[in-house]
Structure formats: C-alpha cells, structure tokens
Length: 84
Image 1 (cartoon, rainbow, N blue to C red):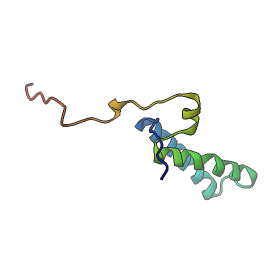
Image 2: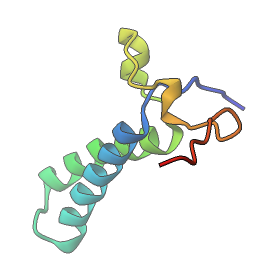
Image 3: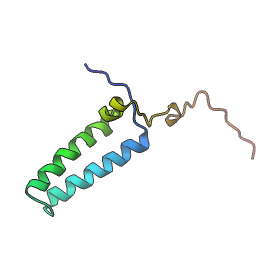
C-alpha cells in the first residue's frame, strides 16, 4: 500500500471536491460535449483523487502544504471553559 503524507487542508479538499463535481455535472448533464468534455473529465479526476486522499502531487513537487495540525481539534487536550 502506498502511503502519502497529507499536505492539503480540509478547506482545500472541500473546494477541490466541489469544483470536480461541478465540472463533471456540467459534462454529464450534457451542456458541454466533445473534446472539451473529455478535457473537463481529465481535469476533474485528479481533483477528486486529491480531495479524497488529502495529498496533492503538485504540492509535493513544489514543497507546498495547506495542511496544518490545527485542522483537527483534539478534544482530549481542549480545556473547557464553562464560565460565561
């Protein structure tokens, strides 16, 4: 199994997923066809894969990362302040 280090934030993943779904829906609804439809499908597939795996090969090749450990809240370490 290939294990890739996460380098995308949750916000980045959501944006890529939504863009990929919009591109694919435009193609499958039938608004765009032919060569442009094939290009849109080819562009949207890496977006979907990156959004699912939270790893972007382009970010890896350029040493970029939108992921921070603050994306996840650790509820065990969080101090609860019950005073108002």
